[in-house]
Length: 363
Image 1 (cartoon, one colour):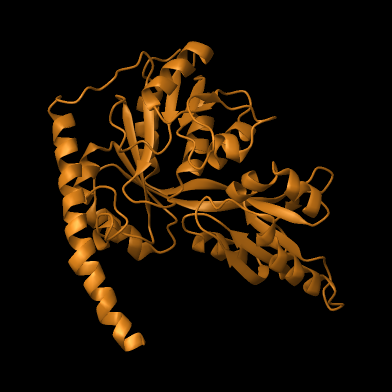
Image 2: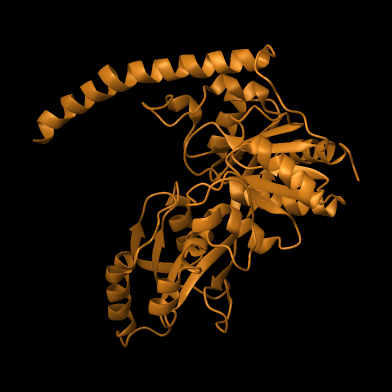
């Protein structure tokens, strides 16, 4: 069976997906060509705009970068606003995010995560970015706007395009959709004022990206901060002295491997890892096996501490506002790993670009 499947898979990829990938690339190229020549309209706004995006589909760390920039711009005296399309939400149109009452289903997990961390800043979702930004400006009067996942959204003019790349998925080894994961070719990076390579673990990868990309380039890594409980009343777990603490891990994000690697580096011992699709919409049935496994671990007398149930912050946003989850699992030790990004190489380039943006239209 496997011997037959390999040539079928090869034929499928290269006889069907490769031509579709070429057609997709032609369409992307024509669209960018029209924007470059001013044939498609670009809407300019009265405040500076920073667009965070990527070349590929899947997780590259855009949300932690948005959080870093919101803090950084706030320190510079700005009152930044954050706008995303609200991927995965069930609502439509413009919606100003209320961290107290909204759920991931109403605004998307990323926007809810940002709003809960930055309660003093305006956060909104809208699939029409132009209309969304204009309404956000009218309502909240921010001094600048951060657009999430907007490198390909060229209808809004911006002062800064910041592109995130996953160090473990070099774009020069990938193909355009649908053959690969690329939304645009590598050459599109010429539009970006700053390229940030995230999830860097090896020096060889830094040198490889420097050779291939060059220009304004910075490198970041994920830093684990603490384990935060889902439920009020439970204590935050600081990460010191957690060596060999048993847990069960699960994640529904674009690329969960760095998350699983991070919790192992912290000394946690995931006895079982469960993977779900990106932005997975959890249902009660998803947790039957997880809880059964947890109960078997918890009943082992050899364990010094109660095993934990650990996930990502985005997954937590999709769960803690679900009434069925709170009702059925509110007594279990669910935690999410709170993370941040740290610039480990190219700090001067990073700071120069962000400072230049902060100086546009300073309040």
